[in-house]
Image (cartoon, rainbow over all chains, first blue to last red; front, side):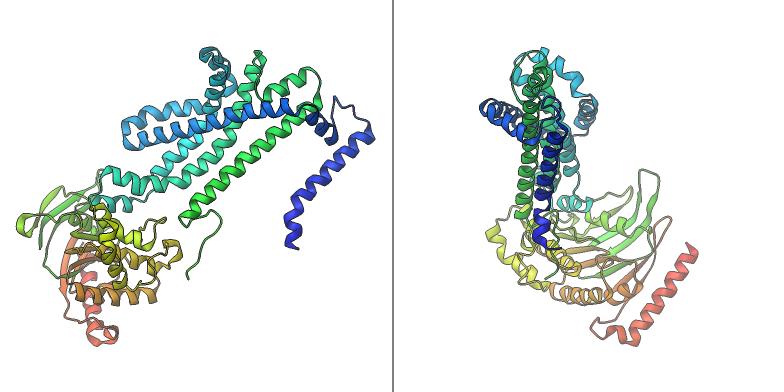
Length: 262
Length: 247
């Protein structure tokens, strides 16, 4: 198969599917409040681009803030756990509790307790995004082979040297992989929290727009907000993937390539 | 250099890894610790390095002072290099941990790499090197601090036959030029016979030193073809058979 075709295959398949969708809803006469066609969705977006993009910005700010908070907290707690068995015993069960408790169940409480809407959303999204980056970093910090730890001991390395020259560099690929998962989860957490907050009347991000459009039977607008959410998720994933590749490539590592003996 | 007297080591799970091991290391020795898996060879090496402590017996260093960091070099079975660091940075590591600046270490690092035949590969990362080359970097890293004692734990076990023979030959040349003491753990009778001046035979369950065989061979490219080498292999094989029978 021509590689050029392979490259364009996903876009071509997507366009064909959209065309089929548009044709199907038109031919079958499906009402726009049940299933709008792609053209109606695009029209809904251009009917209020400022409102939808404003909501997108709001969701994005919550997502990015939550991702940065979860990365900072995750790394800090993983470091504490790697430094002390007591800290490990104290932290790990609570981290698991946070991970297994559904955010939909906690979000209303968080919103009541925290009060400030923006902070509430960030707290909810952080709870969802925290675990992968935390667990991966903790695994990465412990991933250096026992022989390398022995070598550092043999050469009288300080704890600081062992941390900065061995454990943190060993943890980097794990951290980046965790960050990529957490990026997607931060968006999910932000959207879930926005739904809960939106039900209580707090107008904010794209999830609220979906909720609002649902109440008004503006299904095309719902889809437009949904498409924006999907694109945001893809952008976060691609962006973090690029960061991952760039950082690992700088030190001669990539996920996909293995250099051979010269 | 070191007198090991009736040393024993029992692991927390109750396994007796080593019992009543006594050995004397002289300066400039090349000793092979030879025996099957589980006979305490690596345990003895870790006790000598200070990475582990004995439950019984004692290790007395000549002069009453245990070697400082960097006076003992250690080469593991795997090259155990930092995968993200270049060959140069890997060799620089022990000096860096001792607080030597990169600038001051540059000459020593390059000369250690050249000594193991890796001049020109300073900027290569472990992933770009073959198994034999990675092991050479590991040996250069152990040599860069100019250790008095070099401990090697089955360093060539994972390599192919050709690379192993080449590295054995190079190790002998290094030992002759540097003059440090080497304790080399192996489970290969042929490797022990080729490399060591003294072959210390160990038996398992519990790990013990069974006996010691001295070698007068002068290792070189043709050594493996000499009748003296075949006779030494036969001696060691016979002694090992007897030791295992009585174990």
